Length: 96
Image (cartoon, rainbow, N blue to C red; front, side, top):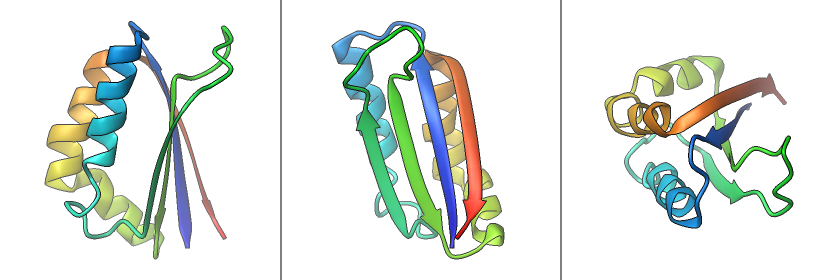
C-alpha cells in the first residue's frame, strides 16, 4: 500500500474558498478508480505555519499512484484547480 499525503496552503484562505477546495478534492471519490482511500481534512488550529487542507489518499501500488497523477479527472480538473488557488503545496509519499 502506498500513502500519498498533500498539504495545501490557499492564496486566500476564506471559509468559502476552503470549503470549495475541500469539495473539489472529495469529488474524486468514484471518479478515480485507483483510489483505495480518500480523506480530506480542514485545519482546525489555523496558525501561521498551518496548511489549510490535508489530503490523504492510498493506492495499491506505486504504479497506481503514478497513474493517478496523470488520470484525466485528477490532472485536468482537481490538480489544475488546486494549483490555481494555492500559494504552497507539499507532498509526502510512503509505502506501508
